[in-house]
Amino acid sequence: MRRFALAKTCLLVIFSGLGVMNTTQAQARAYVTNTNADKVSVIDATNNTVIASISVGRRPSHIAFTPNGRFAYVTNNGNPFDHVPDSVSVIDTATSSVLTTITVGDGASGVATTPDGKLVYVTNYGSGTVSVIDAITNRVVKTIGVGSAPDSVAVAPNGKFAYVSNLGADTISVIDTVRNIVVASFPSGGDAPRGIAFTSNGNFAYVTHVFSNTVTIVDTTTNTIVATVPSGSCGPNGIAVAPNGESVYVAHNCTPTNLQVIFPQSTSEFMDRLVPRAAVEPERPRKPAVVSIIKTASNTVVTNVPTGFFLFDVAFQPNGAFAYVTGGSNLVGAVYVIDTQTQSLAATIPMEGSSLGIAFQPNPRPKSKSQCEKDGYKQFVNPTFKNQGQCIKYLMEHCP
Image (cartoon, rainbow, N blue to C red; front, side, top):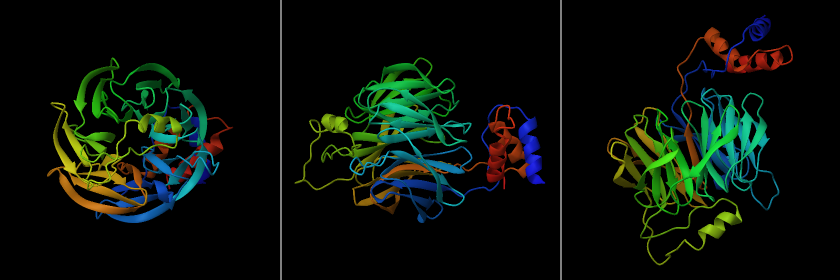
């Protein structure tokens, strides 16, 4: 009976896409990629314990969620010696298992989803492209050429554009998410752009630069650099804007007094750029890398928080009370928890292998089953008899 009702819903309603809300309110959970262990760890942020470990593809890199928090997309950077194509693992968060695996380009790295939950963008570091995945069918629907060595991707809050950092070209590519074409490309303002984070209104994007140790601020209305901020240390990697918009947190890979080799992707191009610039001082005792805190009102670094070694990515709890930072060496990984009020290290969570990407599972407000179904069928524009089965399946999975 319900299947018939859903079929009627899928056939009769014509709307544009909106994300589906899960009916069960999720706890605050952070998902972390453990590169050398080929796993994703799930952290319960209420007590900072690992509650699940999910096997994914080879060398998982970064992670992004659909807006309803039901699915997580994990890029797998692969191993050039095992001849396994780079891929994206799709995790069903309800079962903590991999639903499917999608083949993408060479050197899968950054990943981001659109606010409506329809598309997933994946940077392919080795092939200089971005793969566009349809989140309903979990198939690559387009491959877009961008600059050399695209590393990170972030979708603007309004969902209209995806910004890609081209680490090998020192540029930012801007993709129109409706037409899925590059509509702009401009100098990033520094050397080796990596992390990208938008302000909540989307008016500005903050971009880290690995080799120039800077953060540039992009005015997204004109795609011009309006400020350049010393990052606070060396090897800035991940970056995130606090939920209240007052601060920007920058994770560094090294310290000026003990420079460490920047964690590379598996490409010779990056190593060619890295080796002449990197220095290693094994005689000196290691000093912890830091997370720099930039105040957005003044765009200056106000403090550095010592944490651990080889820091990579940053994510905030949804309420902004704590920032979680990934890091670690090839064998020992960790997530460092920073209290945003005291701006100090509050906890260290051991991980398997080197911890790289991190993202918090979205926690949307719960909705009734009828409202969930109403929002769900808006994923399908002018449903036809041909795809109504897919529509029904989608609603039954998302609106239990």
